[in-house]
Length: 439
Image 1 (spheres, rainbow, N blue to C red):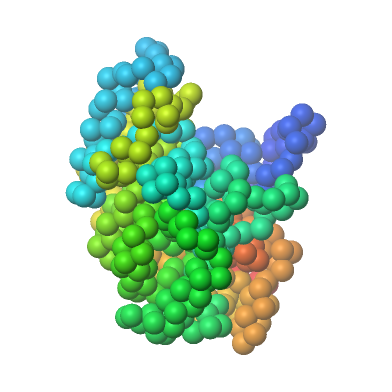
Image 2 (cartoon, rainbow, N blue to C red; image 1 turned 90 degrees about the vertical axis):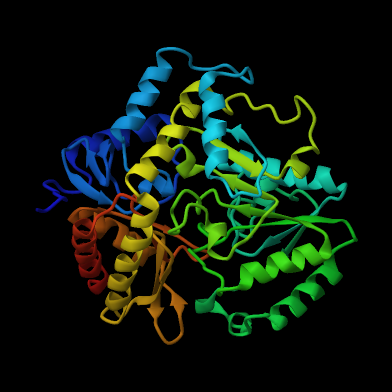
C-alpha cells in the first residue's frame, strides 16, 4: 500500500492561492519550506488543502513524537479547552497530574520540574538558575549550538543567524568547539576515551576568556539546528566529569532530543549523564505549547516564589496532554520503536550514501538522522542553497516532506514521528534516493 499521493503540481491551486494571500498580510520570515499548505495530519501523513498526501520526515520540527493528531491527545485537549483555557500560575488538576507524570519518568536523581511555554523560555530559565545558584555569570556554550532565539538563548547559541544585526549579545558567554566526526579538522574525535587533546584545548579557551566567574555550561546531546552533529562516544561523559572537577553546573538541552527521539526516553541515558538541569520542549507537548525545566532540588532552591512565573507556562490545555503523551509512549512502546526503526532507517540511508554522489555523510541516533549534502565528497564543500531547495521541492513533488538545518544549511533532517513503520521508511527512502540521485 502506497501512503503518499501527489495529484497536483506543487503548490496545488488552493495552496498557491492561500500562500499568496498569506504573504499579503503576514511578513514572510520563515525558513525555506516546500510550497504546501497543510490541512490535516494523521500519524506520519500530512494532507494539504489540495488533497495531496505526504510522508512527514519533519515531525513539525521534531515536535509530533506520538504522530500527528493522536486521538487520545486530541480528546484530552478538547476536554480541557471546554473547561478552562488559562489559569496563569494558579494550580489546576491538569498541572498537578502533568508534573507528577513527568517526574515519574525523569532521571532518578532529579527532584522537581517547572513548566513554561517554549523551548527558548526553558533554556533562558536554566541559564538564569545556573547564574543565581552559583552567584557567577559566565556560561560555557558551544559552536553551532542552538538554544532558541530570545536574547540569552541566542547569545548562548553558536550560530550567527539568530544574533546577526542586533548588536552586542548578552555578556558572559564563553564558546568552545563541539566535536563532530565529519568535520573534525583538529582531530578531537579520535582522541577518546579521555579526549586529552580536546580538554587541553578547552582549558586554554577558559584561561583566555573567563574572568573567574564560570557558573555552568549548557549543551545539546546532539546539535539540532547546527546540523544534526553527534559528538564522539564518551565525550559527553568526559565533559560532565570536567564540569564536576571545575565545580560548575551542567545543563543538558534536550528540547529536541528528549522523549524517545534518540532511542532512549532521555538522551542523557546513553552515557549515564546526571546533569543538574534538563530543558524539555517540542515532544513534551507534541504540538501543545509547553516546555519544562527539570532539575535537582538543590538548583531550584536558587529561586523564590514568583521568580519563575510564566503567563502561559503550565496552562490547563497544554498540561492536559502531558500525562496522555507519556501513556501513549509507554503503551505503544515508542522509545523501543525509535531505537529499532532508527537502526533500520539509518542503515538504508547509509547504503544510499554510496550510490549518491552528492551525499557526503549520514549520521544519527534513534529517529534523528542527518543527511549532509556536498558538492564534492572529497573536499566536503557544502551543497549550495539552490541544491538543498531542489531536494526539498523535488521530495515534496513525490510525496515526502523534508527540511534543512546546519551551519551551511546543507543537512536534510530525517526525523519522522516515533510511530513510523518499516513500510513508511521503505517508501520514503525510495523517494529520497530518487531525488538525491537526480541532483
